Length: 79
Image (tube, rainbow, N blue to C red; front, side, top):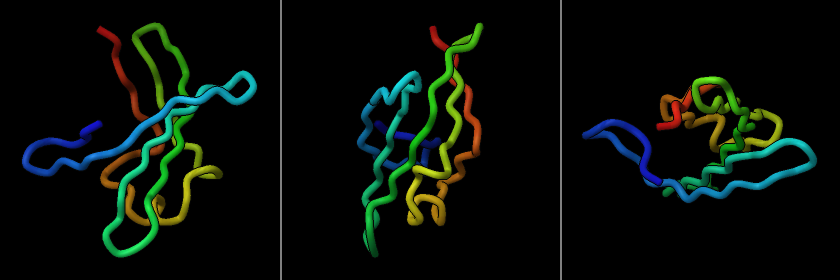
C-alpha cells in the first residue's frame, strides 16, 4: 500500500485482522534506522464509508514518533 501525495509517498505492508468485535487495519513501515513502525487502526463502518481510528495502545513507539502526517482519525469514503 502506498500512502501520501506526490512527491512524498511511503510504502506500507498492510493486513486486516478481527479481534472480538473489532476489526483492525495494521500498517507496517520499514524504518532504516531502527525497528519497523507498526500502526494499528480500528475500522468503523460509517454511512459515507469507513473511519479509521488510531489505536495508540497497540501502535508501537517508532510509529508514534514518525506518524508520517497521519492523524488520530482518518476517514475513507467507499466508492
